[in-house]
Image (cartoon, rainbow, N blue to C red; front, side):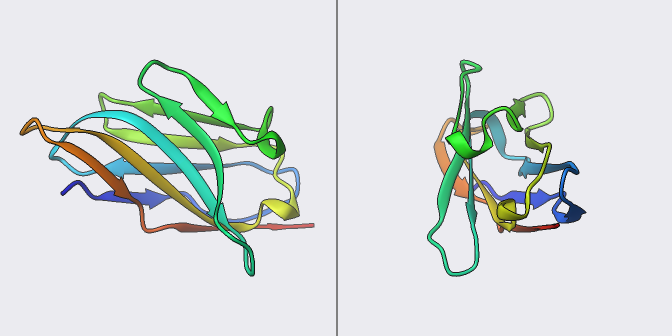
Length: 120
């Protein structure tokens, strides 16, 4: 099974930036799609962005123009660049990716989540 390891979370002041990374394990051959979700305390998990293999991106309205999702298949890493962060962006962020392994099998995996805290 493919494992996804997230990094890049942390604490930042409002208006600041962070870049989250989601690295797929070595058995990954190709990441076809990577989606990002977040869950704030007391709230349900929310989808926020998707990057597909055809280089299409889609975002929830609340992050459009501020967040940018991408995938580097040479490195097997997905990124979520977050700019102009707001206190309401505070949440645990998780990545979800699907694609194909080096053995020709499809996979779908979740990252472990990383905390993002934005202070006013």
